[in-house]
Amino acid sequence: MGKSLPPLLTQPIIFSHPSLRGSMDIMEYFARISYRGSHNKPDLATLSDIFQHHIQAVPFENLSIHCGERIELDLEATYKKIVRNKRGGWCMENNYLLSWVLKTLGYSVTLLGAKVYIPELDAYPDEIDHLLLQVELGGKSYIVDGGFGMAYQMWQPMELISGTDQPQIPGIFRFQEENGTWYFEKVKRKQWVLNPSTSTSPNVENEVCRRIYLFTLQPRDIEEFMGCNVHLQTAPDSLFVTKSICSLQTADGIRALVGWKLTEIKYNYRDNMDLVEIRMLADEELEKTLKEKFSITLDKKFVPVNTSKLSLF
Image 1 (cartoon, rainbow, N blue to C red):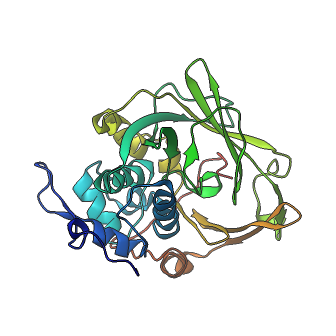
Image 2 (cartoon, rainbow, N blue to C red):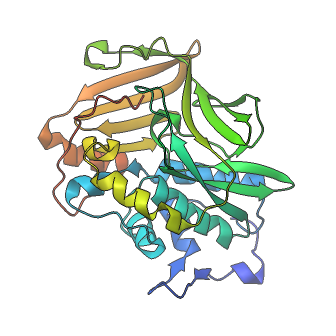
């Protein structure tokens, strides 16, 4: 890495907790996300760099549900799944692990709860169904969310300020605050779909601004997400039950496998337009695609599903 580390960080940092049966090593996590940068100064540059590596290495996915596995909201289990078994996870797994990483490195981290917008209903759910992080740094607050996935995944930590556009490679993100409630939204580019006959979202071309979720700054404990974690993987009408999802941010876009549909997007391909390519896969192509496109190898038989009409793009 070029610079010698202070004595405290020349050895792997081992995080231990009374509830953990094993140990978690920050250097092993860095190897998982191919991060070789500095980690001895908890500043914004380091935070952004680690975050970028995480979202390009760890897929947002719910494949466990469709392999007959249970998703545990347990830090050791999440660490083993993502770091050692090289899997991905959904918001509560990705951001729970990120909270440990950032706290281990000396950042001030608070768990927050959000309600994800349902465009087909033009509404938000009654209860929180998304975990995100607030990081205090240099007198400013930042939202860090490495677990939303798909085309609405932020690529950099976002300063918590209302009404200010924050352009990133995926598009323009912003927060709007009203009476203590914060709304997160994205301004989308037009899309150039190479094979539109396979697209099932006719409104995608006309959509300009998309609400993503709302949240408050009420600090949360991980225990407050236990019920949500169970509900989302068991309720018959849950998006995660009715769709098998695996998405990964790339150097210039995103790729996603939803059911049998593989979508690859290249952001800002030309003239403020995203290039979209969609392909339907056969059953025999799924295992190879997961391995080659997402670096995922599943232990159990994967049964894809896509019965919900809810749009993820």
